[in-house]
Length: 384
Ligand SMILES: *Cc1c(COP(=O)(O)O)cnc(C)c1O
Image 1 (cartoon, rainbow, N blue to C red):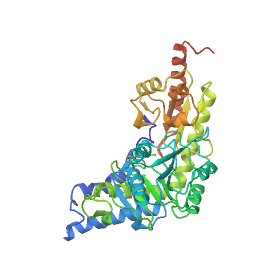
Image 2: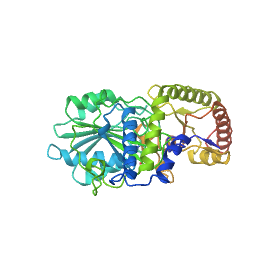
Image 3: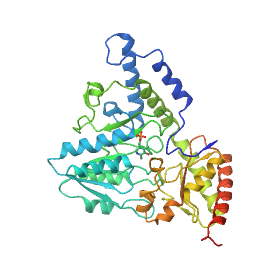
Image 4: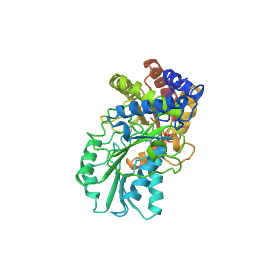
């Protein structure tokens, strides 16, 4: 099998699984308990908190473990909206966010908040000027994703952070795709809230975190016990948290090498496709792009058909985002970038891992070349 759907989820590293196992088997104590059998679990959670924090240059006590990126996004938006409601009810986000943000914004709109959705250019980037112009006296929150999950476009986060700080507006970023894949410094980038997830960085599913800057008074989304300094109730997912921490430590140790290796392979993949498959179009920015993302539109080729034919050769890729797969709607991200709905439906996303090889890319390019030729030959509209 050739797995090229790493933006949807990644294969957990063996060392991550090894770190988790004792917390399923022997060390099953509840971290809140008093006896020493359980206190080592509390220590394990604290160690993971340090590992997560250090990856984004955050203070250890500003990391709150959650059930994943989705919960962190919901928490950041809903509780910031509630906390600052008396100051204003205006939120700024973008048209290309993950549904964890967009659907939460819709929920807030139903509750009387007003949301501005910034458009993007053909590369999928927002304009910092336009963001500045969208700010109003009643703007309480800016939420812009660090990097896009479909096309890999990286936003000008540092500039956005500077504008937010200048206007004293809370700045949240859904960094699920960038966390552990790109360098992030929450202090230097003036990020107040940041969402991350374990399973996008070779860690376990069902665990992630929200970074909350220490000056922010954001209350709990989940009510119950006093876990996570009374900010996130529920018995800690100790094995998951330990695995998430281990994945962060691995990511930190090899970040630069992986970025270099993956972006070289990504560029090779794109160049090979461009030279071998006629009339195709690369989606997303070539310069400001996640190191592992390749997104291409193949005119006269239905993306879904290509995926099925790739699957017959045991190659895993995706069209649109995994979260919208199964629905026939063209990707909201590609539409916001100005693609026609046909071009959006003709797009396929390949996302590499740190273990993807050149041989796998060569096999995939061969497969894609054949599939495109075959599907186009059956299309009544394609004549070249
Ligand atoms: C995967 C993803 C999420 C959701 O994270 P989960 O941990 O799966 O809930 C949110 N935002 C982006 C950009 C993602 O890629």
